[in-house]
Length: 148
Image 1 (cartoon, one colour):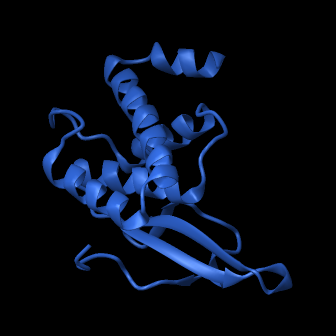
Image 2: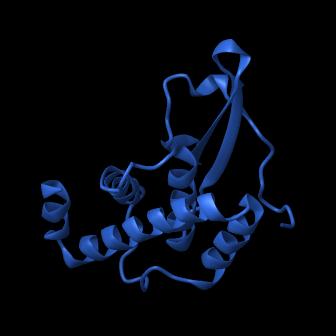
């Protein structure tokens, strides 16, 4: 908790973005718990088109956005799963003018159980959700362009 307050006493823009990211992460977590996934995706698409997190005075770097998401995750009760983190990254990246690739993949785990993982790629690099064995996950078709 001490690190969170230390982070909050940094620049005003960092404080604002960190608090917004923390709220957004927990709203997405709640949405994943309460809403059907398609409904949540519609709300996210709406927010990406119509809501802005802050006026475009200075666009944060990809590294700063990743830091914000990681810090917010660390300070959220219970942390956050990969899907919530990837959805928050998709929203933030899009709102600041970046074009992220949102991916969900599946793999067979131990005892033939289905496992899933979500991650964000930007310019061919995994920036949120990197795993050492990510290559075992088979990406599902993109949700982009699908009428929800």
